[in-house]
Amino acid sequence: MLEKIKNGLIVSCQALPEEPLHSSFIMSKMALAAKQGGAQGIRANSKEDIIAIKKEVDLPIIGIVKRDYPDSEVFITATYKEVDELIESGCNMIAMDATSRPRPQNIHLNDLVHYAKEKKPSIELMADIATTEDAIQAEKAGFDCISTTLHGYTKETKGQKLYNNNFQFLQDVLKKVNIPIIAEGNVITPDMYHQCMELGAYASVVGGAITRPQEITKRFVQQKI
Image (cartoon, rainbow, N blue to C red; front, top):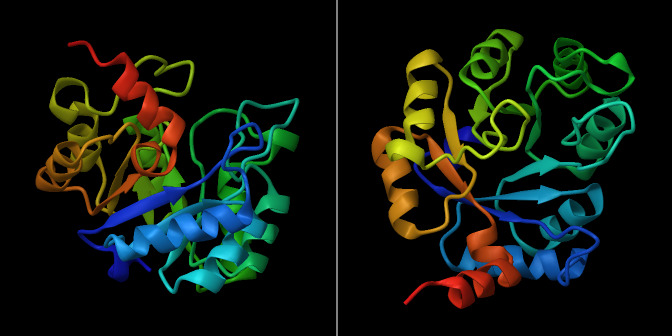
């Protein structure tokens, strides 16, 4: 999959249960619209959505399963159960939380990586990270690529934005590891997307700016004149 998304735009087609567009059918059509607009890949949440999207488009898919667990803050592909569901979905790449936070059921990240690779050797793995240390450890763990997804969404990085100080966090991660880095997280304009690419990102994921109309509407309404 990595070869197919190089230098390209990946569109995240997700809607949580409390959101108006929550529907596998709607997400499949969102993915079709993204493909028609030039997207080179899709990031999708849940086995059901991925299966529906695969029927609609032939783009490579990064799969995740978001699920809350009472004993952990980790909710993106947190356990073996989610890995099994994603392998069954037929997605091309599995993304999982690769932060240093304790996982549900005391599962270790390295064990989850090994499990996924052993169960389906051809599957590629993306590490969703929040810090440069996360990125370093993810490369050591055997991930195929790294995404800046969780920067700003953990206690340690809360309030920080990927685009702060000319995307300094992205630049720092690029210097620390040798595997492909995917820019993701609050990339909300074409200029920001192109800036990530110019700085050396392998590809970039854009979600809310394309697929969450409620967020797009808010930006129009809240824009100061």
